[in-house]
Amino acid sequence: MSNDINQLLPYRTIVAAAAGDTDALITVRDHYRPYIRQLARRPFFDEYGSCYVFSDDTMARQLEAKLISGVLKFSAV
Image (cartoon, rainbow, N blue to C red):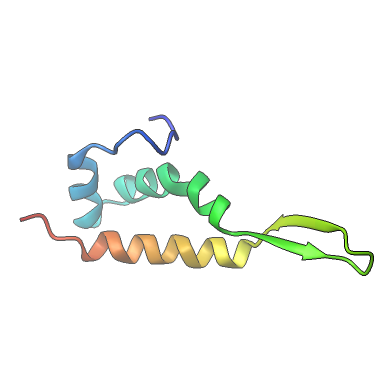
């Protein structure tokens, strides 16, 4: 499956992930990983005022955990 965030995940993958299927959870996580990495980017300014952008791994892990907990709470009607 492509990691293009504009491409939708199949419904059956989401339902399987909500049921606790490990492979489906990994697929959902991998699908949203580029978006999570973008959200976890943080600016850093040095003493000279130069701006550097780095990926905050702790924030990325927290977002991944929040995604997985949200998927597991999903109930298909």
